[in-house]
Image 1: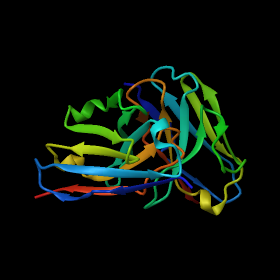
Image 2: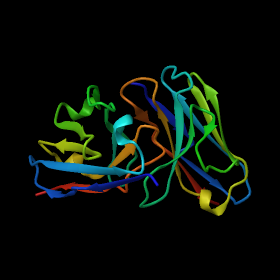
Image 3: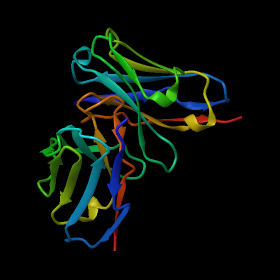
Image 4: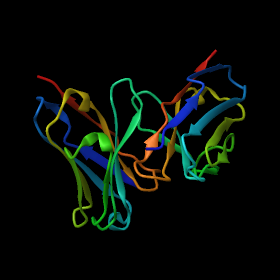
Length: 107
Length: 114
């Protein structure tokens, strides 16, 4: 099973600041890495797939990069609605696995 | 508009069974693989199972140890998850998700408790 590690666990920032979230895989997942945003009481929302492709309707302030084992989600300038939980997911190998999440909260 | 409407959750005793449903609309259901994901209270996301578009290929999380069965009825545009031998640690919100992961159901809570 591929284990995903996310860092930091919590990121405290102010609106307008840049957020950089990391996801590391225990073995290469090539580019089969996705990022999700989740708010309390809601289903996850796909932000990025294939490491760097924005999903439909996702604002340009969200960007993804990386390949192999190291990946980054960047939010260029935080909006109020961006404060939430973020998960990475690998679909390279079965079983599909998720990282433990990074919480982005308001400083 | 793509919609995934879930039903079938609820309270069940340890050792009991439950069947979850996910009714799809707004897309050609028979052309897409589907997934189930769960989230225990206050915890992260855990992938549960996957089924191919034609129901001939399934995958499960190792932790389930054969207790859960995914299936689909393409004539009814509906995905199912049969949960057997339920334990307290199966308590979670269960989500269905289309294979592109762009669309998710609203989630249904399964509570396993005596």
